[in-house]
Length: 219
Image (cartoon, rainbow, N blue to C red; front, side):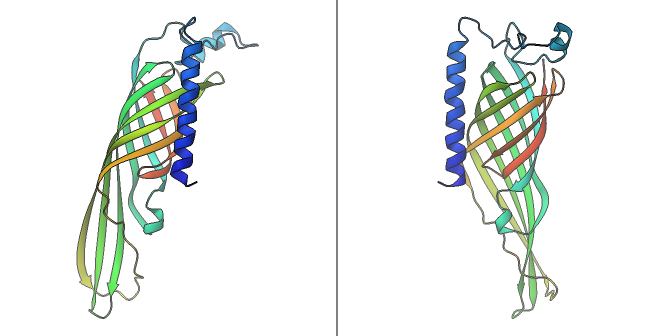
């Protein structure tokens, strides 16, 4: 089983658990964590997040992420711009959300042609725009785990510039152009610092295998 298949299986499992959570919450439309023992009500209010609200209202949130491990790490040696992503999400229910995410990354490499007397500098720019669907499950008083699937478009631009041969520069592999429709899978976790601000981390496919970031709830 490859990495993407493992992530896809994990996302499907979370999706199934989210459906069960949604069905079990029909009599009480929102998972209520204010009944956790040994917590005073004042402390509970400070920890209020989407899973603590007694009456749920759909809301938007914005998240920004930076990639720690690029998908193309094995194909190159230098990143000019690490994978960066920004997304807008709409929380439909306590356990499900739909969003749009755009991401970019830029890499550089040199190819030496000693027999021809020149070096080619190659810059590769990647971009991706996708729609993502997530299932969410509460963890503790402030946290949640989520997983889901994405579908969208990925494009690659490659620019090359020739110059004099550089003997000190070892030839590097370049990112091969990859354009067209693709599907992705991911699993992540979020921790609420305040009712609006949270920190998050993800593993998955796309322009980065591992990301960290922040999210901000607009309501």
